[in-house]
Picture 1: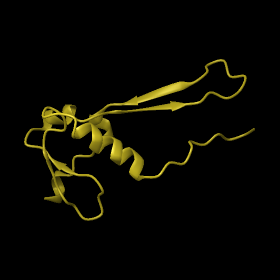
Picture 2: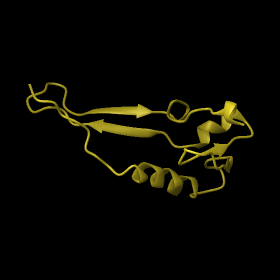
Picture 3: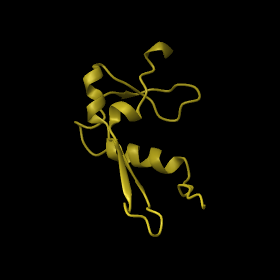
Picture 4: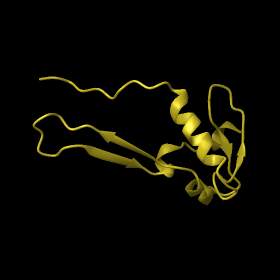
Length: 89
């Protein structure tokens, strides 16, 4: 049995993609950037519904050779990708 791991990617890469998306228009990432110690990317939202103005992420997991299923794509919507840190002030 062989284990297949996700390829390593620099942690900055997904964060840069989110930043690029957020800079793409006024209706994207509705909120204001916030600085929170130990967190690389934070926004303050005035309305919890604005979480849907943020991007989700899609991960494609390559199927194993000989697999009947082939590649599998996992879609993670923004409300499951981002954490509400309202407790952090």
